[in-house]
Image (cartoon, rainbow over all chains, first blue to last red; front, side, top):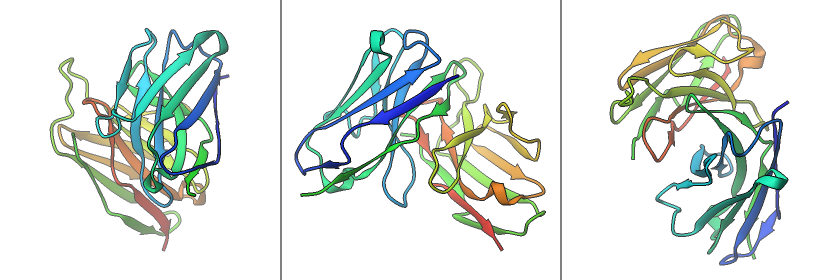
Length: 117
Length: 112
């Protein structure tokens, strides 16, 4: 069955770089795209960006200068890297699969990232 | 960016009652291919969002028929009939017609 699971550090210092991994199973990264969505504590959802089946990427313009999404298809993993972290980047980070009818159908459990010194 | 205005912010309902959530977009969500990419999600406490309705009115696999979606253009509605305890949580609309993708700000469904 389709599964996604995020992993990464729970704590990042301000100005440092966040690195997260999304490990997927039950589908191929060359057939489906995977996106990242984040949610600050007690707040709503924000689309960050995604990587398509052909390896191309799309980013939220608000984050584009700090964000990079890549993948390793042999390991079924998608990576998020975001630099220059600030306290308002504290959030739960989710990876989610994009279905061909243009919606997110399966989600990971999310990983909480706190930006603090 | 397309702004998704979701109302109400909080929606107290009685178990067994009906709930209605509105989502309005700052521009039409009709894609050049004729499809309208407006979807609804429920996020239960401590969980990741789960898809309820895709493309305005299509229930996702396993979603009970108590949930229904309607609307067109810029104005969309999610209706929940015969509310059950498992329906409580935060509801979000998502538009995927235009990039960047944008979510509504959420509606908390709670017991009256």
